[in-house]
Length: 275
Image 1 (tube, rainbow, N blue to C red):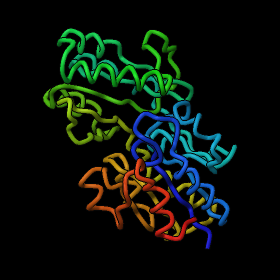
Image 2 (tube, rainbow, N blue to C red):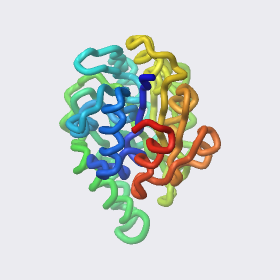
Image 3 (spheres, rainbow, N blue to C red):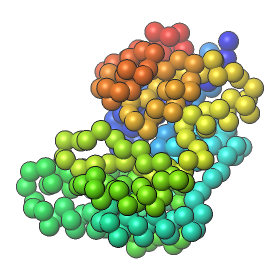
Image 4 (cartoon, rainbow, N blue to C red):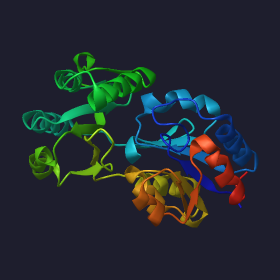
């Protein structure tokens, strides 16, 4: 029976921010495709950020949290923000001191204020560690400075702030059109999240793939690890969370597999007969 398998990237297929899955994960993907299953990337990353992974032989993508969906060369769904939505979101975030990164189909651009803010808070301890982490992510995922943005359509925004109060007005202003998906508080003490159009999510993207390929939802499997995987894990027939993932997602999932660094994806595929 042919199945559709959907994989989050960061923390599931790869270590966060990496473009290189472990060999065990690639073995799992190859084995599943050899058995006749389709394997899709299902990610918050935009198409540009995930493109280095396509060489490993995936059948399609649900990118930008479901805002851009394709099977092979066929685009199934394409829903960027309108220009007005982008301008309003950027203005209210800037007015309330919320740092953001905008994700387009062909590039990602980051708010230079964040680095300046971290530098102003000192060069030691958590801020210094976060600054180093941000630089590494920007380099590995080809995230460019905001000054290079030329008005391309935006699919999603990633936000960061040091205070929930700063989000109150942006949520009031954009909440009817966009959902703010917040990650669990991280070790640096900053709040991270994603501003995602309510017209789509990972779950709706999966439904669009199923409809196009004529495969029922009960024949789908999803692997994820964090809050932005919730719609995927609620939609698929079998949901699996990584052991080092969000506690809430582990409670939601049907099963838990070891972390990706411990060959978790391969072990999860083998346990459920996918490869």
